[in-house]
Image (tube, rainbow, N blue to C red; front, side):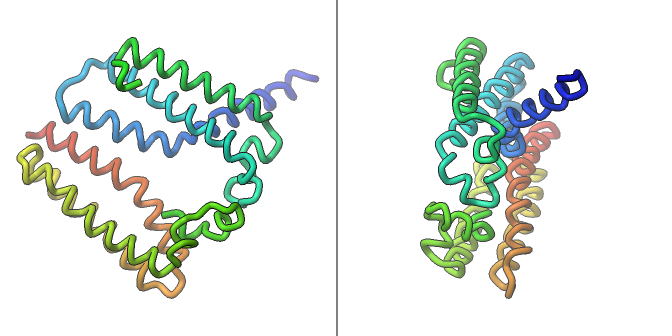
Length: 227
């Protein structure tokens, strides 16, 4: 095999390994982990780095193990059938070994640098989940009931985000951000309820929800910085 052919193969293998960790989802988790560290004080950069890397490896390893466990149903859903195992690009033994290696490395890193203790989508994909036999909310409750629950959960969530201000932990900059971010989330959920075809607004709410928590924690950091 020529060098030109080997390079793309290695690159695709590296991409598959990265995809096993679900980097986009983990990026959100890292933001919601690191931001409170700065809200609480001024952590050492080495601790922040260890928590970031260790947390990524731990969550990424768990995602890889989850793909190994879900290999029998991933092939039944269009959303997941292109993952490394169902597509045939990676052997299941490699995936589980990678997941365990990531988790083990994360445990060692967090235990030595941090501490031992540290060591909606459903509406649009209900057909796939039904084919795989996964009991998601729209399949159990029905579409309209799921939408109503989305509204109730949002109405419960928003007051909770204001509690840090009520307790005096955060101030006006955070409150303004929480009101604006929460208001936009509520508007999106109402649009899903009112839409005759919920697919597009449901996707919009899902995508925004991925940013919502990260932006909310970022607002906490900004609030403490300007206080």
